[in-house]
Amino acid sequence: MNYKLKNDLLEINVASEGAELISIKDSKGKEYLWQGDEKSWNRHSPILFPFIGRLKNKEFIYEGRKYPIMQHGFARDMDFNCIEEKKDEIWFEITDNKETYELYPFHFSLKIGYRLTGKKLEVLWEVVNTDTKTMYYNIGAHPGFNCPIDGEEDKVGYSLEFNSDGNPKYYGSDAGTGLRLPERHELKLDNGRSTVTKEYFDTTTYIFEDKQISEVSIVKPSGKKYVTVKFDMPILAIWSMEKMNAPFICIEPWFGRCDRIEFEGELSERECNLMLNAGEKFNNIYTIEIN
Image 1 (tube, rainbow, N blue to C red):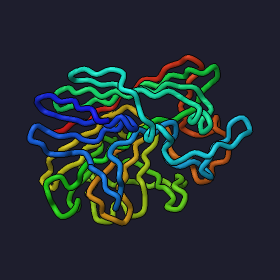
Image 2 (image 1 turned 45 degrees about the vertical axis):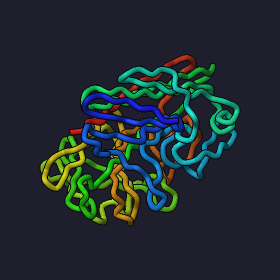
Image 3 (image 1 turned 120 degrees about the vertical axis):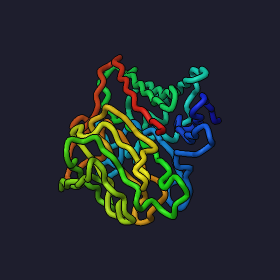
């Protein structure tokens, strides 16, 4: 089932499956969110929970048992309940069940909210540990935005603008395993911007750690920003489909990430984990602004 929020400037649609944002349109009907296709990437803006990316050997170890787990966790494929619906705000929720417990042995509640304020969309998260033991998890965003936006042949000539202090440093990912590589690289910026080329996403996902960035915009060849994502999270990934010059760019703020390719350890030893003690709650928010 799909749900709609609308004000004078924006209209969004959210699917109950995955509580996934599936459309952002301005008052003239222009679509900003990637609409998906089977050729490249058939999602729009999935919620990543309770893991982000791939884990070493596609599994984690907890209390001596191995748990196979899919990339980005299972929340994006679950049917959420709509628990609150107002004119400018809507909330969805899932809780653990028998099937999730076999994949991830924790009791939890995950709520996803969307709120419209002018030309800004706020995306809100709430995670509650309803278990009697410590819970380890990741949560992240994965919105994909149309690029090009004005009917050009491809996104060459567009750029990404970062609010980093100098040239940000990033890690890449291994094409075969999806795990984070050990080498760190520098993304050279020109007045805070990095120009997109046909080969920009051919070899890697850009993974920026250590809270270097809290705001990213996609910029038209004319120099005008048309979408900005703002967040307070330690990790940012920038991705598009490899070797396809696909017409979208994903701006992904994360709490957590894929395992390092050399990682060895159990769940509690994973780097960049979030942790909630029994009964504790976590809240965060990020925003998408249409400029």
